[in-house]
Image (cartoon, rainbow, N blue to C red; front, side, top):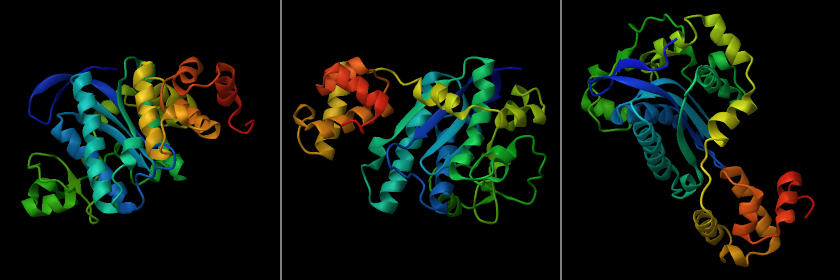
Length: 307
């Protein structure tokens, strides 16, 4: 099994690439995809941003309030640029369609290098398993690259993006890039065909070209552990001043006054929100939000019911 591989990038260069996991996580009640059009656009945003940022998509999944993508990229910088581009472009779509300009400010995006065999195999299996979050069967979920894995489906019956006229490509992909050299194909509904956009060969060799091995890993996962490993654990702990500034800005938007002037019930809300969306601890939260340490410990361990 090769973790680092030599591939042809979208720009045409041959280079060594590393596997990364990217997640775009919706917090609180943020719903990123509200109808089938949104799901379709998110998949297309993932692909067009990968093309722009010179990375390759291995496998992906899009559910109501988050998406996960595994990519091959030359560096952490390029993986991070891809992740930020996905957030930027989908924010533009969401704002244009729904007129809600600030909801993506609550969204966290990050790219994590998959540095060993355990992380790599489990990340690639965890991604399609997220279909369960939408109450759907993993193997038949429409907005996932799962079907491209170990698939020998012929693409002859699907339309090549490269065969379309420029205006047609723009309408279908919601982007004005050239995209003439992509291998992508669309189905009768105008959706991208997973087998044409995923580097399925990479996942297959990671699982020793054994489909049963892949399916067993998907079915036997501890999803809570993988969420911690891929989403929560990689968050970097901020300096007190940075966390304060972020939460103070949030306090202004949510409640009006400065963070330090909030009443107790609203400070408790800030503690629970900050602990869920940042890599932090009780000591830092007590300092930043100006609460006794034992109270913060109680909030984090027992929730707000005590108060």
